[in-house]
Length: 302
Image 1 (cartoon, rainbow, N blue to C red):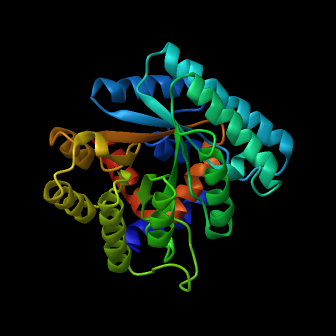
Image 2 (cartoon, one colour; image 1 turned 60 degrees about the vertical axis):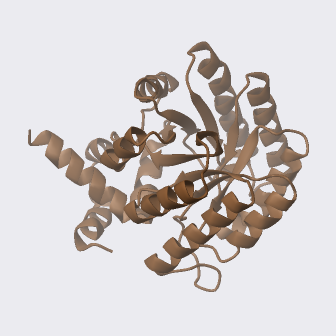
C-alpha cells in the first residue's frame, strides 16, 4: 500500500464528518435521489451511461430491507420520467440476504419485475466470499423468470473463471467483471497485484470467447490497454461490451476511453448512508483515497 494512501485511510475515522464529506463528495452523488438525477444527467450529457446505487448494505432487520427495496423501486419510474440513460445496481445484503435467503429473493424479484415494467436493467453486485454462493443462487432463480438482470464476478477469486463458464453454459452470461475489493483468505483469492490482473485478463478473454456481454470494470491502465487489445483482436462490436468506473475516480482515464469511442458506464452511489460507505471504500481501496485527496487538494489550490 502506498504510504501516502495508508496515512489518509488510517486517519479518516478521526477526521470530522464534514471533512470526510469533502473527500466523499467527489465520488458520491449526494444524499437524495434528486442529487443522483443531477449527476446522471451531467454524465449523460458527456455521452456516459450510469448505474444508480442506493447506499446502505448489511442491514440487520427485515424492516430495513423493505425500506431499502422501496427506495430502489422508486428509481425506475424516476429514470423513465427524467429520460436518464441509467440502470440500477443492488447489493443483496441490503435486501436481507443474511437474514433470510428466500425473503431476499422476493425483494430482488420485485425490483427486477419493476425494472422490466420500466424497460430497465438490474445489476446484482457481488460482495464478500461468504455471500458468493447465495448471490449466485438468487441470480439463477431470478434469471429463470427475467432476462433483464446481470451479475458481478470478481477476478481475484480463484473460482471466478469456472463460475463464468458455468453461467454462460446455462445461458446467463451478462457480467460486470471487477478485480474485487474485499479482504479474502489466500486459499480462495489471488493476493498479488499481477496475479489478479492476469486472472482478470484471462477471465475477460474467456467471457468474450463464449459470447458473453462484459462490463469491464477497472481504473487500471494496464487492464484497459489489455481490454483494448482483446477488443481489437476479436473484432468486438460496441454493443458487446462496455467499460465501467466509479464516480469521481480516474476521470482522465474515463475521458480517454470515451474519446476512443468505447461505451462507458459510471457507478453512481447516493443516499443517507454515505459516511459508512465512504470509510469502507477508502479502507478497501486506499488508492481511491489517494486519488480523491490529490484531486481535492489540486482543486482547492487553484
